[in-house]
Length: 358
Image 1 (tube, helix red, strand yellow):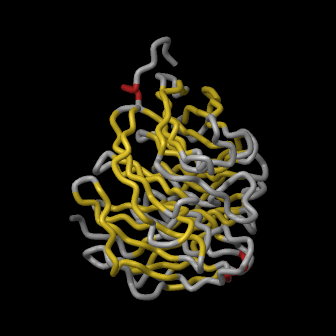
Image 2: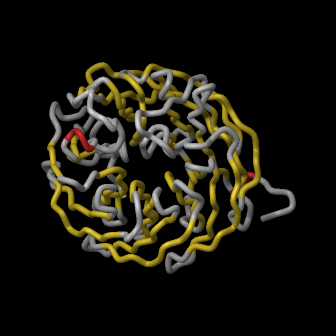
Image 3: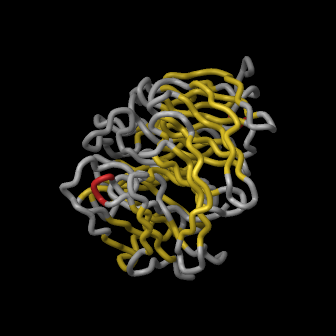
């Protein structure tokens, strides 16, 4: 197993901390060009809808798969049922997807073969209302949003998750605070909680806490140099931090987007994409080696812009429109420019969250 990074953080979570492992069109489409998987988080039955990626980056429907659980909506959420980033994540080491079933308090494991998914397992999330997952090698952590928030760890053995009871952490947040969503909620001190990760995947007993009054840190990513990148919904900005060996965070830069509800952020190399739910736009930024960011351009997307994901080679970007249940596809130029290549409407996915590109 590779050495683990010093902290974990889940991106854009509902009851608490920012936690995710640090690390840096054709007529007859085929999944040879890859696939995009979109989660509906529908309360009548959560599903993962598959699309083939065409040569130009556009999408063609390729079926859907039930997760074996139900979706649900956090109090106050409008275009983002789980108010999180990472509700659907890829485990490329095992060629699997992990999907949270917020209404069932479970996590589903699905095997990926081209554009086809096979449900392998449904397992208890270790808490109430799971909203996000993070993975590193064989180690998986799930963030639960309700009942004060909690984190549960698992080992992937033979393609299935095995709960490690000693890797459970309660976050001790105010369970009655509203809104329930946003990493470290507005009512729960606007703090980023950093947990140290032991060599075998165990978490520190308590987190290192950094409070950012009024910033409302929501989602996280990492630039190519390993700096922490945070989308701050309260001030509509993208902030960066260096990560110390003791899990402390040191501010490097704050870049206002000039948009509304800057809640999500994803990265490919030194290119960052921030999703602005209130403006229906994405903002492209370039990250420098020292962790500072510069805005390149804003691009219009469907209303309620939420999760976004790059293709593995960084040449295509796919963005969820939460208000309309759509996914917009873009070709990405070397200078970070975005060119629209199509839009699809995902069945049953209005306000759904979770997108993965293979």
